Image 1 (tube, rainbow, N blue to C red):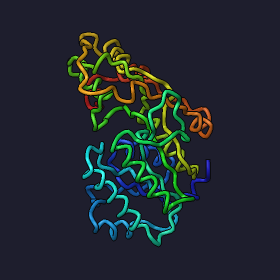
Image 2 (tube, one colour):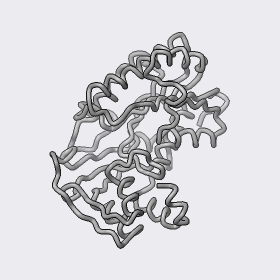
Image 3 (cartoon, one colour):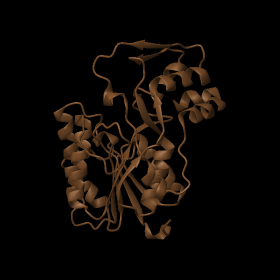
Image 4 (tube, rainbow, N blue to C red):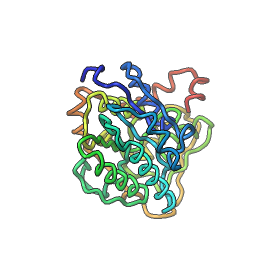
Length: 294
């Protein structure tokens, strides 16, 4: 790991995001000075954000962009997110930043029956993925030798604000004594990565001044049915797991597997937390505290 005094400050744009909060936590543990800028403080979409950001960022700062309106569902949201990046790039003109870290998504990749890695084809199947890929290309054109792009898979963990289909939604349901309803047979195989692992890895990439593209993926596949049954077994045996008809085709053809070799080669000895381990640890804590975490 590089000497900490070589990193003066890290500027977090979108500091209230689920992932940014975890990154901030681990940077502060390393005694790094973190400047947190949330959407409430500065609306990155507005033109006046350019001057506001410019006054806050200094030469040799590291900038971590975690701000996005997501998931992108229409062209208006797509354009909104591109405007955010355009304003931020303009605000940083004439400032010699040390590194630019961009929080992207695994949605940039084309579906494949093979393990996806950082060199896999980027042909997004959704507007959300296209937005992230377009942002990546735009930022790379300005920060060619300074950019680090991180692409997490499905992120789960305590205090998740999105309540997305999967571990986060299922946990809230079983805690409230509600049944879990799965699409189809819940057979899709997906990679789920724990929020604290994501925070540790991004902070590690920042501290070690790394650049390039990095997938943040556990390398372990689980079906949604397997996760639901874990919830029932570990958290609340009284709930039932049911099934409902899909409204459309199965996402990603039911299979989305990743190779995490690049992260493990750079982060020696790192071990990703598995969903069943997370659930077992949660259940051991005080039940009142658990209600606050989810």
